[in-house]
Image (cartoon, rainbow, N blue to C red; front, side):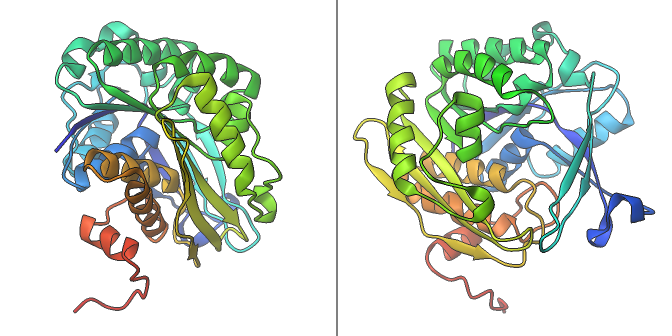
Length: 343
């Protein structure tokens, strides 16, 4: 199995129970999660050697976040203990036509204030095969953006394949700043993952007549921007998840990919997810499934089908982490979406 390193922020998630609005809630459900942490858990769950790099405060809350990762087999030995606080996000889960809502409380968190000197990137990447990061980490702070670039430089020095999930977060930074920072980081990237909003807000590419708010997809637009992205950045693969949002509870879910060498374009099987239990971490479970498939030696089409199936299943699981087994993913990717009781 491959050694895969991910780096980012793990946060304390406080979510309202039973689809309550914040103003109704008398208590919160507790989980830990974050983009790259969620990917690491998926990969460890599939049997890969997954390590997560971050910084957490040296206190019981930081220790609890690390324990949540270790529970699922993620290596944590290079996590720095520094800074004053763990980032928090509050989640109000929507239903039907009422959208979910996220409120961040992550300013000056440990990863936002940790300097590059806290991490021995040469040691971290000396035997790694793959490094994954997202656009969330550079958005957390200017210092975190600098640390991300230092990690990328070390990864490339050690011959490590690099993937990115563009993950634009408008509550963290503007599109203008995202494009300035992320365009520079693309020089280190081999595999680029995103969706239609990410491509536009982070890198400036818009796919044709797609309007995600209306549940409309124009695949020819993706062919066009994928070609442009490969021409500009030389990506080995460009991938986009395709979410058609009919409501907060009902989405169609598929994905598309282009091989940078052959320019072959492929659109996956589509799943209707209804009702959605928890969509947070859906994109991360997709990235984890894709990285798993490619490192397993699947061709890019098979890897995409594995990723889409893995992510469709994540939408049925509460919390940030995708805890489905390989067998469950392969079963769904193979065509069994019946949901019958397994006896």
